[in-house]
Length: 144
Image (tube, rainbow, N blue to C red; front, top):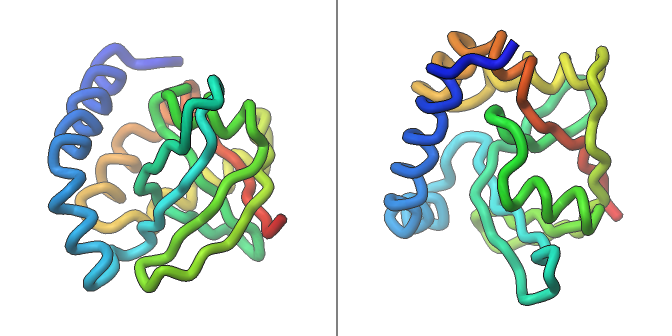
């Protein structure tokens, strides 16, 4: 079941991250930030490329990206395109195919992997786990 509190809390959190994005990207490019990676995906309307910093989650031998609060622009774009590019802080790029996960064991493994987020993200995801299970959008990513 979705939580009104967590829906609002994640919106505020991600709005703050968007405002701080230039500063965060500078630190990320220079030092890296845990599991953070840049995801580039073509906009649904074909008007260009959307770029977001996301966590690259690992569960077993699979890798995942996702958003805890339901669909947002980049998840809709990735659903539509089915492909994108992962960019590492050192500039290396990997073209990926992405498959949106339905509810089930694999999606649950991706959600549990959110504990890999750097603090305080790992704590927030853990506290919001029920909400994330109800609303989160996750993708398995593989080299294309």
